[in-house]
Amino acid sequence: MRMAYGTHTRVRLGAATAVAALLSLTAAPPSAAAPGPRWHSCVRDAQDTSGQELEKLGARCAEVRVPLDHTRPGGPALGVAVARIPATDTAHRVGTLVVNEGGPADPVVDYLPDRHAALGRLAARYDLVGVDPRFAGRNAPLDCHWPTSTYFRSAGEDRAGFDRMTAFQRDLAARCRRDAAALLPYASTRNAARDLDLVRAALGERRISYLGISYGTYLGEVYTAMFPGRTDRMVLDGVHEPRHLAPWAEYGTERVNENALRNWAGWAARRDAAYGLGTTADAVLATVDRVRTTAARNPFTVGTFRIDAHVLPVLLYGVLGDDLEQSDAGIAVMLGTLKQAAATGHAEPDPGLGELLPALFTGEYSAYGSTQTAYLCADTPGPRDPEVYRRAVERSRAAHPLFGPIVNDVTPCPFWPAPRERPTVVDNDVPALMVNATGDPRVPYTEARAMHARWPSSRLITVKDSYRHAVYGIAYGSACVNGAVNAYLADGRLPRADLVCPAARGDGPSTGPGRQVPWTSSS
Image (cartoon, rainbow, N blue to C red):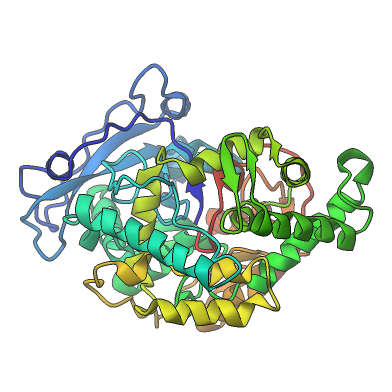
């Protein structure tokens, strides 16, 4: 999952008004009808820079009507935002390539130009399509009016801290029951897959090719299981194995996050003259631990925000998942700010913390967190008893004092309405090209290997000694990965054998986590 930062102004509405605004007063068309989209400009207003980028590429946008409840195709409907950058080399057109950026609930339409750039010359041969999942991106939101953008917190240092977080999560769930009860049952990966198939039909395609990033790999896997035979070429980057999402999405990722943090600490140690965090990786990690223990014992402030045992670990966790030079430098600057605040009691935020802290402490992006959590609680609700989480925290704390209390902490899901459907059993085999870094802290490499074994027809690209989450695209700059992915998308032939690519060490603009904050493992 990645915390997305949007630019839209959201007006708070009462629950009844919000639901009325979101649901259509007309019935959704039957699935078989699949009317063609009514295309229009992607530019919403003069400040819509993403729409302007799309317009320059020849994109057109539309809203495909889908049922709120797919068991009632004639009932209330939603509009699902779609953007299409059409193929320009129509003589050699391959087909439609649909993208999902992860999350769940990450926007897709606004980031479509980045994927177009990654395709290079191949982009001329595809209709490149972005579909914002229901309640996300340009779609009408599901908003519980939270005082934060994410439920993600650390359980803290003791039982009292865990109890505070249990109350915090219970309150978030109560707000959703109050303000979004009519929508919660319909935010799920299975419904997103159903929507995707209606988009496929509306586009007039018998089959679609698919590029899924992080959580988008899970959506793609579910889609192939629910709608067999409707995919052509599939690329899965940052690969989830569905059974490993249980009992909850972040469970068991302590070690991979520690490995990523140590890798960064080695980077920072080689630049101690610039950042002053320590001359060895161990010394830098000792600095991290001193800041952590200070936040627990004597909370300090950064700007107007209080940094304590529940928040400090999340800040460190949230910046992992991207090992580009500029990202490593940003982490070093952030830790320098936290080190100063721990020593003096206060510091002013650096640019990174200036973005992260409002997301944690204000409801500016409440809709994103609300929608993401709704998907997660439908797909991987986890145990209903908070004590199960507390025991997991205690088991993990001694060996993993920084990350154990985060990835095992209670979530809003124990207090959420029970899911309407069971998770999809993905028991098929689909030809696909999978990509994963060995040090991925969001989706461990072991999951990619497990999914590759479950789909024997697939091939796996392993990026060695990389700690980035999701590696295909212009941000990471891996000619090895990009070349292999684009070659497959061009001719439809998987590599004869699995591939190994070296890590790329670029310093360019990020198209994934660099424009979004990766709070949790399902991104």
